[in-house]
Length: 251
Image (cartoon, rainbow, N blue to C red):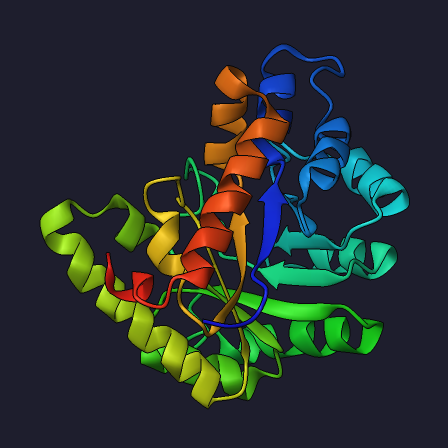
């Protein structure tokens, strides 16, 4: 097992807590800076169309104050494209978005949405942002992503994380095959959604995965142990799995 595995910390749900009461506390930008200090390699923030957590001002402040890369998650809409072009984040991850969903429920349909996505991907590429597509671990979606002009795919690992133990091995095998396909088509492979201390090891051990994006779980654990401690423990588990040659098959 070789290669450093990056950790991106999603700070959306610090903003969720802030917005539950209004005002400015807790501050997601402060959380991002604490995550940096704890060893995060990047910060992820999803600016949703309904602004239910991260706000426009949060994105402005993150852009101006972070010293690690910002991964801006957005829907493929004209409004979100304009915002991304204005801020020019290190990475722009296109995600599906439904107003009624509690969290992102599945991957982007790159196969069916290829024509719609093309102009957004082209504009983001031209601005200098690395374009990532958040997709389910399905061969046809990976092939479509390779044809789209995006540089990165982030595989939705929710089905693996949420599966009962009897089905988790099957979901992991599906994920493992997907990472191999991503490597074959020449895209950079990231993974995220639902990873916890209990599920991160096998995914972190997959050699084709170069970045994990983790948010909700870390923010939840921070309530009990603090954000720095939670991130450091996740980092330790990732590094341990990466160094263990057999852990890729331990799902």
